[in-house]
Length: 254
Image (cartoon, rainbow, N blue to C red):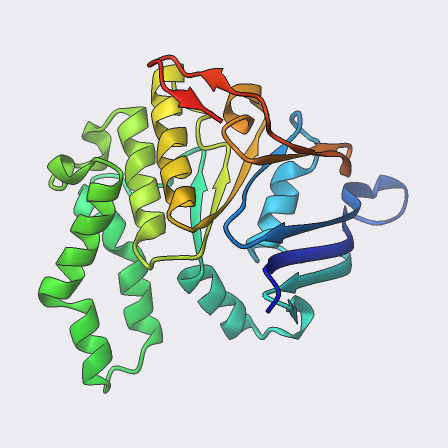
């Protein structure tokens, strides 16, 4: 059985047409295996976030092929794409995307409420999976995984930037996804909080999850196992991370 999770072939994304056309992603090809930790690294405007949106089914390529778990994604219906986004992929963004004036618990709960809307309301199995102790246990486990259980009743505007990002990661974990897509997750954080977030992502990877990270920061990318360097929409390098460095707290990170 193939270990390839994601395979893209000659993928391109073009915005507008004619003389004003912008080729945000330009004929890229690569593979990502299950359980890998891959950083997509490049400067602002290089196309890395557009590529991330395509990989996360938030946008569609103009041309080329994208295979997910061996299946051509052009054959997926909108409902199938929505289910993959909700069940198999956890998203973490630079701006956290937490709801204001809402508790940590309620923010982490959101994907479960989305499941409720999609599920058959007459299925007792589905209903009981979304309410009561089982739902609360899932939320508390996700918060425990990122060290935020003690903030469960805080409102999002009472949290620091680092705490907000950890809550965002907990929300991404709530449906136990196979993949975490993190778009500049340390971009709004100080270096100490950024390292804490990267250590959480490393831990999730060690537990078997595939992590795909978009970043322009070298210190962030070096936490991955592999770096895809992108410039002007093209992959210019595909490198294994072999350098070992010391984090600020003295821990050795690969």
